[in-house]
Length: 150
Image (tube, rainbow, N blue to C red; front, side, top):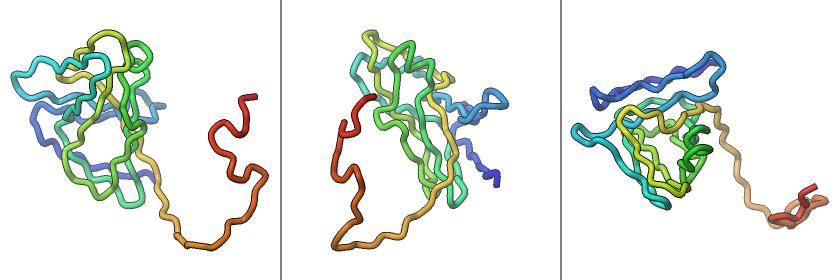
C-alpha cells in the first residue's frame, strides 16, 4: 500500500518536501527561515532547531523517519543529533529539524537549503507482556561488542 502524505504549508515561503529522483527513498526537507533571517550559523558542536514551515498528516500505521542528508554529513559534519528521528502519525505541529555541527568549521543554514530527508515507513505495535523468565539464546546477556568485529 502506498501511503498518502498530506502537507499543510504553514509559511508561504515553505518548500513542500519532495523526492529528488525516481529511486529516492526519502523526501528532501528544506529550511524555512523567518523573513529577514539570512542564515542560522551552526558553530562546531552547536545544535539548532530549524523550522521547515509545514505540518503534515502521516497515515495511521506509518511514521516519518527524519534522517541526515548524506552530502551535508559527509562534507560538512552536519547531522541530526537523534538520527533517525521519528515523527509520529498523530503529530500535527510544524516539522522542525534538529541539526548538529560535528564539523570543524561554522556552517550556515540558509532559507530553502535542503537539510534533511523524510522516509515514510510502516510501524507495528507490539503486544507487551511482563514475564518472570526469558528464553535463552547463544548470546545471552552479552552487550556492546560481545559478538566481536570479524
